[in-house]
Amino acid sequence: MEQASTGWGNHMAYETEASMSTLLRSALDDVRDLFREEVALARAELRTEVSKATVAASGFGAAAAALSCAGVFLLTALALGIATLFQWPAWTGFAIVGVLLAIAGAIMFMSGRRALREIRGLPRTVEIVKETFQ
Image (cartoon, rainbow, N blue to C red; front, side, top):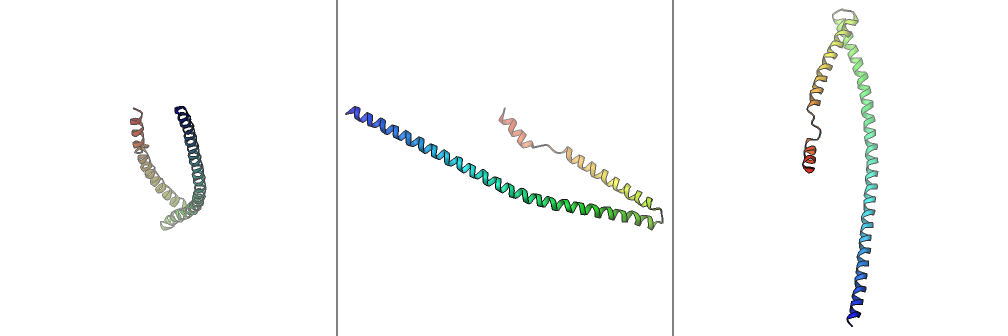
């Protein structure tokens, strides 16, 4: 009688192990499917957002081109206006505007260079990674 119960116990243990492995496999399959669906959703959303960003970038590009042309015309008008106001040759007005633009450009360049020197490239992340690997 003891052997019969031991045999039955082994059979139940085998069924339990088989059930557990089936459940585990099923759960892993579900997680894998869910992960694949999430990745597909993320890709679709990313495509949509990239498309929107492309449209926005195109708008900014067109605006930059239009503003650049407007700036050239305004600077030309300023240069000619200075020359006419003082009754100088046209080239002097362009020279004055050119010098003023060069000074403004140099100031902006120095400011940008100073700001660039202050960038510390992910200081908290670098610190955490150093602590993690020590």
